[in-house]
Image (cartoon, rainbow, N blue to C red; front, side, top):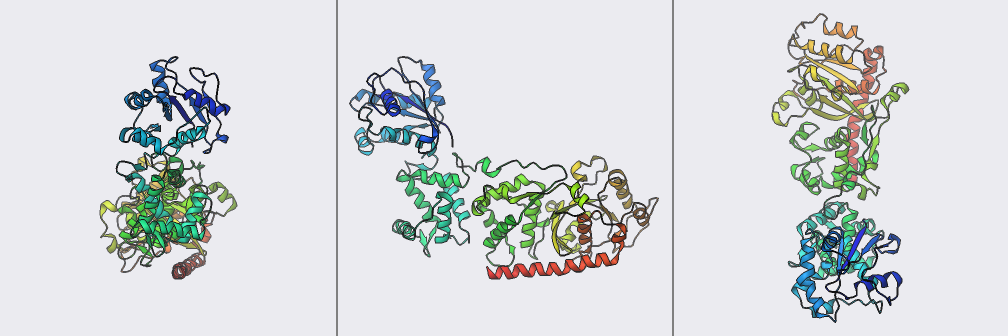
Length: 608
């Protein structure tokens, strides 16, 4: 956790604070007591919380006001000592020391007011003495307890959790515990059943609850909270009541253990080390993908929130899924980046595709999102970094003529109006009529979905590159395959594709394919020295592929299978690319496995 610094200040001289320190260290009452004890460090291995503690004494006789202010500012917790037989020392606690300390600390600093301050202000000293035992250095009474509670005030402060005046938890604490409840509610029925409670208990405290202990907990809730228990499970209302009870009974270390296990820091914000467990070093020509266990987790999250079992997430279901996030991570453009159903809702395939896209483009953002969902906790991994696979160098794939990647990037180049956006949207199964219903401001420069090559499911990521020939970045050029799109009905359209290829890709090993878009319109002779077919032959590219999205039904997807195949096998010869048998094997495999893939999900969904 931290290193705690504990400072002792006496209201008046000779109240016994130096004797307390020396008695703790020597375990006997000192016969000779100096004005001030030397700074003492208690090692972590002898403290209950495993945290080293520096104890700093103060003496008005030996130290200045400036030194006092410096010690106050450095302390994690301050213990004010008074003598029970000295009325003046008691009065000086509230009249001098607490105001002085408050003036020299920020509002979040811990005086032992976690336990005492409220009572000095609002209760009589008599009530204070009734509630808390005194310490005695001479009799070695409650010495260890004093230092334990001092540590506890730092490590498990009440302030961020609970408002004693209003006798209820603070909103930030309620918000954090609500997220924890939702993450732990594995079936999303609004109730923590016995299995979920036991998993929660093991996760936080490394031990399950006995059946009788579980019933005892639920009985306490039943007696105190209406609707705290439903269908023999703990509701959110009951869950929050239990933590309020822990705090009120001085057991707030229980609540802090839960909060910290789920990634929260002392300010009840998710800790940066939890959200971003490590900085993944991605070498050049390597990419990031989700592994099998990560996909299983994300499938379970989808299934948990797909209440109507229609294999798509309605706006309400999507909002419920992201309720554990501090903000909505997916905007309207996502619906034009992945597959949706007829209502425009993100499908199961589209949902996994968006996660795949995020992992590929911004792995740190993916780690953050998985952290909000509680991946490391639910999957029982050290961190969400366990969900990520860094692929091997692309050069090795080329040498071995095979790849282990599952995600391939295709950058789309073409002049303005050539049909690039239509090509992206057609990959998501949208014809021209449906594309025309999409708002311009919600359009996406990415599209991602699956393609099947030789029975293997792969993700193809299409990225539309802005047609500014002179400012193409390394990101614009880094991809597995290049797609050059020209408008077959515009005589000036092909020239841009030819220029891009010759300047940026002619001398690379990146495979390229030419797309003759808008093939439903009258083809026009291109005003270029070579025809598109002649250009492709000269540069050993496949012939231009005719394409249109102006269809009655969903556009044909064969071209995307070809692109994925070329990305997977950049070493494939031109003879293979021209072979009709080669493409027939690929396309038949794609059709069969696409149908089987969706059918298998339906079967698994019914089983669950």
